[in-house]
Image (cartoon, rainbow, N blue to C red):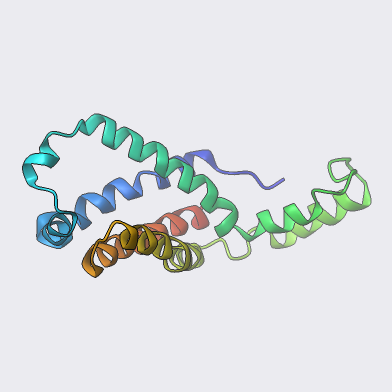
Length: 167
């Protein structure tokens, strides 16, 4: 069976915090972001940062979990056969097909580069539209949307790369 590597997934969930520390630094995009939100530095300092970082990690872990079947093609192959009643019966036709196929192709496309491709595509085609819609309804400008979209495109790309690299 194809399983989620929980250690790699837990490590990939740290990427949003690491990239965020750099991306939202005032010397990178932090000043643009702050101005586009309408918040002040004083308002930011009032936040419970343990809560912010803790929940960010929990949400990032959920993102990393769902990135596994998006990045790892073998999950798709496995899901095609899940309806076979005898898939887990050793020696059955479905089980033999599944195991021999995974023996041959179980590591196909399992590279950082390929994982980053899928993560980046999801940043472009999923995260960016979501951020754009939220930004439009919140009456935020293009800079707000672009700063967040760029962050998530890069972050999901890196997360996908890490998840794709390690079987």
